[in-house]
Length: 182
Picture 1 (cartoon, helix red, strand yellow):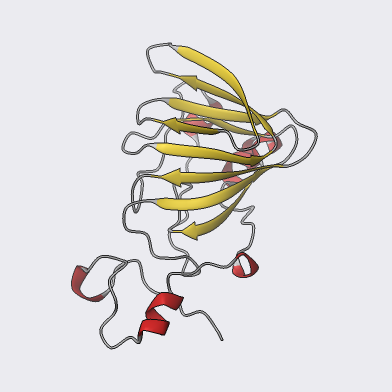
Picture 2 (picture 1 turned 90 degrees about the vertical axis):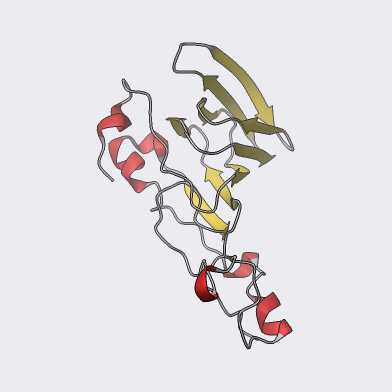
């Protein structure tokens, strides 16, 4: 049986989780399932970063909504209402550059791997730690976050953002990505 997809908003601005008019229960619930077998690693979601420097090459696999990468839409996801959820593959030695969300909390849950996590504020406060299997961090809005895979294998983490469509993140003013147009 194929899995139908649904738009981010249903009839007349109803919440994304609302049952569409006339939909059977099975059809409705089928739009709420995102199977691993139907996902793909999107190495292009953050390609603009990897184009600047190959160390930023990472892949997003979307499950709920499109996340904060700037991907406009993905009809192969569960419609988002209050948060987004994806996985991120970070190859050994690669990194996610420091970035800041002004509007949402962001959660990283490391499934496997070893990541150096760097957190800082625009005022200059700084904190660094190493995260590994099943560690989680919840980063509030207004705090820069970046990570480097310091392990020997691909790291895999879940990424959750606290809005249906988060505002595109920004980079520190002195970072080379700050001036990149997407």
